[in-house]
Length: 436
Picture 1 (cartoon, helix red, strand yellow):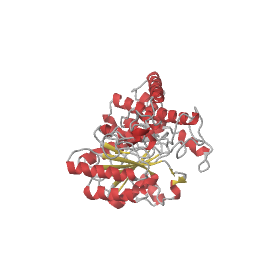
Picture 2: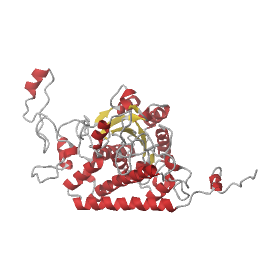
Picture 3: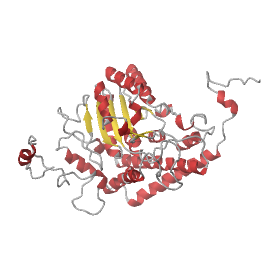
Picture 4: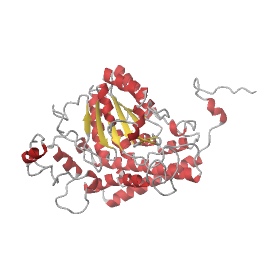
């Protein structure tokens, strides 16, 4: 941004139309706004918090205003924006939703991100030690998405998850003990040990369940949203899916129906750069997958998937829009998974990240790990004086103990009885076993 207002001179040199000069937001100097990921925590008398920074950016006039390391501003494609938070030209933000978050809510978001990270890391270490049966698709590196989105929901709102869904469940309030018991196939787990990693469900929390069918979450979510429309309640549904989930007919059918009937459906695309082991850019001709929403008449947004506050703001906007009858929204969150598609290839006990994988470079992984959403959010909370460094360390220790307790609980639980496999197959109660 040119802070000296020399736009007319620049326009003659570049051939571009002059742009009205606006005063820079507080804390902005030079040609680019400061990165949200580089907030300083030292005693700079002119340093501003992210809230002040975002408020100031409203004068720039470029849609939702989230600037983050390596990610362009939030982009908006197609559809109709909700009234109230944006002016009629869709250019200026009236006020950010993050200003409505209390210190308690912000602390809870940080705590939930840590729960996901440490719980998933525990699963990885258990698998490497040989104390885990089955497969797990780890969510490490993507914690900001689950927490940012689910923090914008009510308990009675629904989520439909994916094969990489542990983080979604934890962010929606899932019980760590029951989840770990289930994922280790114990009789006291969420699904009595028969669902494993891919099918955890808790209807009391609005968790419609994880599933291993790519893209099916969108169809499940749109179906639930249609049910809400029929019942006439003000609930909303969020369906999570990876960058590959928009390829098939499930997403197409869900998006078309959601647009046609203005369903309270929000599709969150977790673009972690890979569809199994194939790079996303090798199979799409567009850089921003949220552009697909425009073909259905749905508003699409692109946000930094490592920025929990930016994600919360976009999700809260979409939730309020859906609750008020404004219809669906598609939100693409650009992020990166730290581990392999599934399992523990390239991973080590006590160390973060999976290195030596043939389809990506270690340097690329380290670059994304440097954008870790958790310490980034911690810096913001300390700078905002929501937490002290000491309290933040204490929360890490508390969450670590909670995860260890969950692991000890799961270890002590019994495995299912063979005859329990026939429970609730067709009706409640046991089905008599037939002897051969």
